[in-house]
Image 1 (spheres, rainbow, N blue to C red):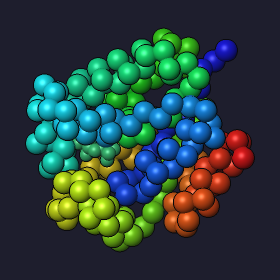
Image 2: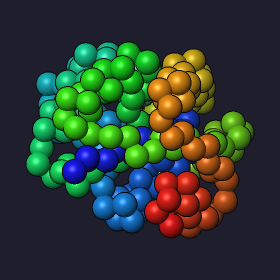
Image 3: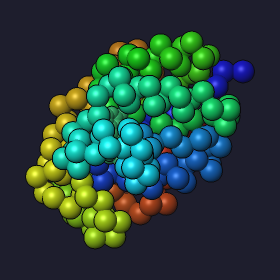
Image 4: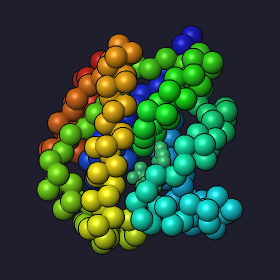
Length: 193
Ligand code: AMP
């Protein structure tokens, strides 16, 4: 059996985390969010948490070697056997190439690449709302939000071109609408509706 992975792309505030939690159930895949993993290290004040604290707070990417190693360790755990839903990884071409090799060596296939689209102004409003609700430091400061959005445009979007060139199924999804509507669009695109 080929183990399957779904990659979830979208700028900060596009609803990746919210959708991933629901898709985890519908697709019976394990949700792996590198952002959640880093925040967990930060809150536990681990060695890694202390190392990445300033990067997270200022909205910069964690170095590829650190991130890739954390993902590799996570993908070694037995619970991923059903399939995975990667949220927030890869974030640039170096990570995307690295992931290709890793998935290939483990016999994983890419079931689909989801790209969620939400207009910029709406993203900023959503992130400010999330800062109040969840207290995420990187959502509270407009300059940090802009930096994260710029990084997405400058580095992460290029991954979509990488997957299109590799003839992977890339689906562009309208991320505006109710949570249910967006989930339904994603499931339909993946042929899982
Ligand atoms: P997220 O919750 O996905 O928005 O990620 C929050 C923060 O974690 C990002 O702004 C980065 O500092 C860091 N991060 C998450 N995923 C990655 C990744 N794949 N590569 C590098 N840094 C990451």
